[in-house]
Length: 376
Length: 263
Image (cartoon, rainbow over the protein chains, first blue to last red):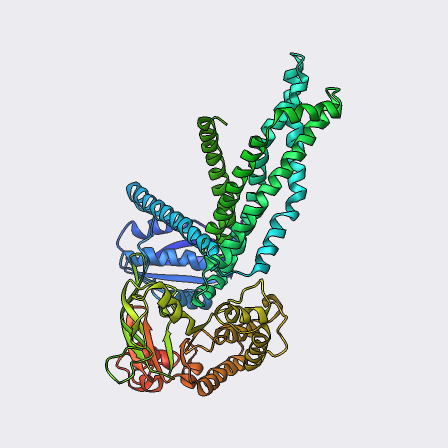
C-alpha cells in the first residue's frame, strides 16, 4: 500500500482545511473517490478556506487534475475559496487553461428530452425523410423524361463503365448463388416428391420457381448488396468531398449526371442477369435431377420446357427491370442524403441495402397479388 | 439587362439575408453589396457561418429570408432556366478542390466546356491546357485527383472554376491547409486573375495575411451576435472599427495597448 495515491483531510482551524495528497496520482493505478472528502468538507462547521498540500506527490497525470476540479467545483458551490498555490505548478496551469474559455452557450437545444419530445422529433424526422424520398423519386422521373427528350446531360463513358461494373462483373456471384439455389430447390423438392413417385415434377418446381420468382428476386438482392451499396458509398463520398456541390454550382444536374446513368445501367443489366440466373438455376436443378433422381438430361429438359411458358420468363424479366430501378434509386438516394463523414458514408451504404431489400420484397408481394388478379 | 436606372447595379447585392438550418439561425440580417472587379472577403471566427454564406451566394442553400441579387436580378425569385444561366456566370473553388475523383484533371475542366459550349474537342483541349497552365499545373492533364497534392488540388479547383470564364469567382478558404509559400502564391494568383480577367472575386478566409493582401472590402460575421458587425476595407476596420472583437480579430488576438493584462 506504500505506493498508492493517498489523501488526508486535516482541519487546522474550525473553518480552514488542508487536503494533503501523497504518492503517485496516476489514473491507471486507480485514484481515491472524491465523495468522502467532499462529505468531510461539507459536514461540521462551515469552511471558509481550503488549502492543498502536495509536496509528497511523486507523479501525476490528468487523473489528479480531474480530481482537483471535482473538489474545486464542490467547494465553489458552497462558496469556499480554495487556495491553489499548494498544487503542483503544472496542475495549476492546466486548471487555469481549462477554465480560461467558458463553456459555449450556443448549443442547438439538444439533449434527449422527454419521451413525448423524442416521439415528436422522430415523427418530424420521418416526415422529412418521406418527403425527401418522394421528391427524389419525382426528380428521377424528370431526369428520365429529359433523357427521353434527348436533353439529359451525362457522359456516355460513365454509363458504359457502370454497365460493365454491374453487368459482366456480377456474373460470377450471380452464377454461384443461382446455381446453388436451383440445387437446393430441387433437393428439397425431390425429398418430398419421391414419396409419391413424382420425381419428374422436380423439373416443374425448379423451372417455375426460378423463372417467376427466385431468379429475379435473388439477382436483385445480390445486386443491392453489391451495386446498390457501392452506389451509396460512391455518391456519399462525392457528397463528402463537395463534388456534388461542384456539379450543382456548375448548373449540371446531379440527377442527370450521376443518378440517371446508374439507373439506366441497372434497368438494362438486371433483366439480362435475371435470364442468366434462371438458366443457371435450372441447370442446378438438373444436376440434382440427373444425379440423385436418376432422370436423364433429356427427360429433365423436356419436362422443364413443358412446365414453363414464355410468360413465366417474361414476368421475371419485367419484375427485374423494376427491381433494377429500386436498387439504383435506393443506392443513389442514400448516397445523396449521406452526411459528410466516413461514418455517415458507411451508414448510407448500410441503409441503401436495407431500404432496397425491404422495398424489393414488398414490391414482389404487390406483383404477386396483381398477377394473381390478372390471372397469370 | 433591364435596369431602369442608368447607373449599373452592383455585381452582387445581398439584402436582409437570414441563414438557418431548420430553426437554428446561423446569421441574420446580412446586407452588403459587392462592386464589379472588387475582391471581397468574408471573414470571421471558426463556425460563424462564412462557408454557409458562400453556399447561399452560389445558390447551394436557399435563404430562410432575404435575397441575393446579381446585377440587380434576383437569384431566388428567378425561374429554373434563369437560375441555371446565372449559375454559369459563377465559378466556385471549393475548400478541398472538390474535383470529380473519377475524372482526370483535364476531364474535370473539360466537363463544363463540353456541357455548355459548342466547342470542338480540339478547342476544348487547348482551353483546358491554358487554364491548367494559368494555375501552374501545365503537364498535369492526365493525372487523377488522387495522384496530386492538396495544394495542386486546390489550384486545379481554381482552374475548373475558371473554365467558363465566369464573371464572378468564389473561393472557399483558399489558403487553408497550405504552407505559407503556396498560400501566398494562391493570393498572387487571385490578384493576377482579377487584374487580367477583371472578374469579381469573393473569398472566404480567416487568414490575416491574405485578407490584408487581397481584400478591397470585407464583411465580418460575428459568431456571438449571429450577424455582421463590420463592413469595409480591412485595414480601416482594424484601426477604426467600433467593435473590439473586429479589431482584435484583425490584430490576431493582440489586445490593444489600453488595458494591462491580469497579474
